[in-house]
Amino acid sequence: MHPDIRKTFVATETTWVDGGRAAAEPLVMIAAAAVVKNPWAGEGFVEDLAPKIREMGPVLGELLTGMIIKEAGSGEKVQAFGKSAVVGLNGELEHASALIHTLHFGNHYRSAVEGKSYLAFNNTRGPAASPILIPMMGKNDEGSREHYLTFQFNISDAPFSDEIVVALGAALGGRPHHRIGNRYLDLKELGHDPKNPAAV
Image (cartoon, rainbow, N blue to C red; front, side):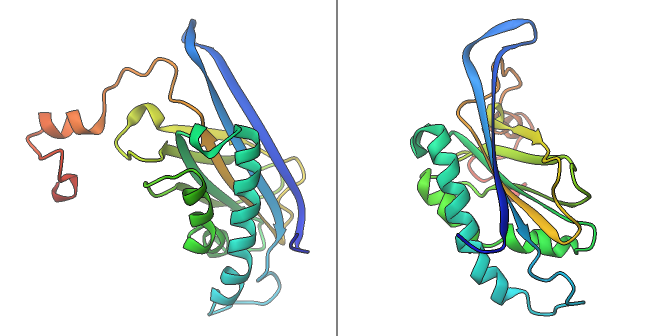
């Protein structure tokens, strides 16, 4: 365990009824978080963040991925995923970004769940008990709107002003009663090529 991790946190939410109607399958969302000492706290403006990114990214990625998989039961069960970080008030937004926007962190999770999409993300700054929001999308299909989800939680005593909360999220299904179509239908209706959305 990395010595700068103060605590870890796991939350699971199961939605059985939405819109007054029971779900055919309950929606299970999971968050795994680590509260870590901000490695750049008290150092002023640090030009090169890479050394600490390379040191901490793999440790956090492996730890949080393991926590998600344990709670989910297997990587195969994860259908949507995302990541988030909240830096304490004495840190830069760049510090939160640094620990999650790196393949040294995210590739552990992507590989474990056999995902192809990039991880949806959120990075903010705030005091202890700040809302931690993990946006998610389908692990293999970025246009699958039923998997556009956000898991929100907080940790009552984190982050301290010199800490960062780093988190991963998972959904084991889509929204219970999704009925807004998908991105590809919109592209087709607008006269664009659904197979080449980047051209839009």
